[in-house]
Amino acid sequence: MTIQWFPGHMAKARRQVTEKLKLIDIVFELVDARIPMSSRNPMIDEIISSKPRIVLLNKADKADDSITKQWIEYFKEKDIPALAIDAHTGTGLKQITTLAKTLLKEKFDKMAAKGIKPRAIRALIIGIPNVGKSTLINRLAKKNITKTGDRPGVTTAQQWVKVGKELELLDTPGILWPKFEDQLVGFKLATTGAIKDTILNLQEITVFALNFLKEHYPNRLKDRYNLDELPEEIVDLFDEIGKRRGCMMPGGYIDYDKTSELVVREIRSDKLGRISFENPGQFIEQ
Image (cartoon, rainbow, N blue to C red; front, side):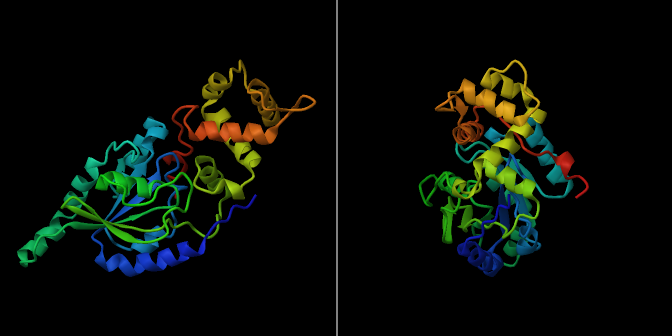
């Protein structure tokens, strides 16, 4: 399966971001804490150049906490500060402005020494679709400034948003690369909901997800679907889940489409607990 998705407004967004960088003090790079590398746009390093940056590991409430801590250390070793946050509940958000002020203290001190009047920090918030940018901005601004949705591609225009007196955010449409060179990245993004379900084969996504869970979170699978043991073959695991959840067709056949929808929905809604689909050890040499 080849997953490709690059709407025209995303290409436009990249050009707009490049044009706006001269107005920006710092970049907030928002990623999904469950898949921090797969939810990073490989073009971002090139786009934002040498601007100071904070990686925000959003949806940390959905990710395996011990692995999220490993990711924070991973970025720290690369001299990129990272914070675990949950834009939906507001957890960790107070740290963002505090850290930004610390990182920009030298710049603002120099500006003050030249007699430049103090102003709010100007930050660019950037990330792939459906990673939670609009939710984060609304939570920081304490009001509904931007449209939000549980589908990718909701934000389609740029806007400046004031966050108190200390911070101004530039919201941009999600930027996603035009081709997934590594299909594993596509499967991770699809499983966590960063790609529109209408362009996917959910059965293939579910096969990936079940194989991953069998290897890394086997007890979660057993507990959720009341299984004493996990079948060796993935099709047998499909059958067991389908039977136990009543995903059947006439004649006693398993409805694989319905079973796939069930499994993916339950993963995304945390019914199988907090799951991280990648860890820093996979990327140490990269």
